[in-house]
Amino acid sequence: MKKHLLFFVSSILYLSQTSSAQIFSKRDKLFGATVGLSFSSDNNVPATPYPNQHSNNIAFMPSFAWAIKDNLALGIKGNFSYNRTVVKSPTQKYIYSSLHTGPELFLRKYKALKDRFGIFFNHGIEFIYATNTGRLNRDKTTVTTWGGGYNFAPGAFYKFGERFLGEANFGGASLQYSKNNDGSKSFDAGINFLSYFNVGIQYIIPGKKS
Image 1: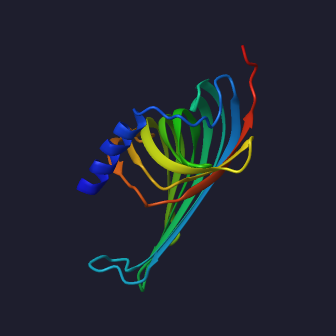
Image 2: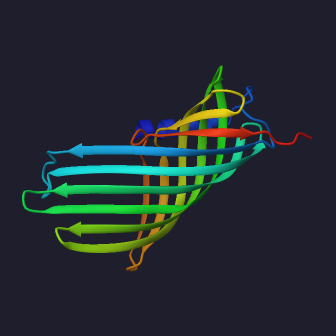
Image 3: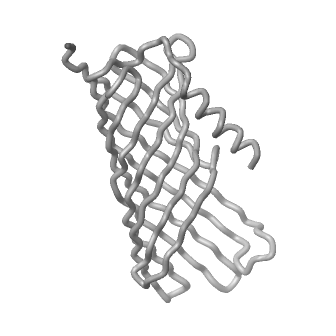
């Protein structure tokens, strides 16, 4: 946890420094998309009634942004993700699946490190609508969730040419509030660097120069 907090603080300090290399210019536009995949499996979870657990997740996030300054973009993206987790015991099988959708407003700062390679820092305000389904053998329950939150996500990029950026994101920190259709509420905070991996591409559309 201390390492995660140190990384978070150092990222903010690094973000405040001035970058001399220009990745894109003020008034440019960025159009792109990000995809994410994650899989996990554990066949020997101790001290639980379901020792065999498998989980997979897929996500798709199209985005559009405006460069409000050189190397600083303000935009909106759509979040679409599906998660399915299966846990089993010798006599029972529980399947949990969730579908998450919703828009996100983001502010993203890019900083070149060397040649075409660099890092970025993404601050996002997201709105969430989710359908969560649980199935224990033949019994099924469905819960609908609304909510929102803030997330901070660092990443790396490589500029393939004048118009294309390849990007990778490796986790982040988040604060989320949610309310279910049964009236229950929850507030969650977490730091989950290196827990998932997303890759994407951005196309830079030149803007009109004054």
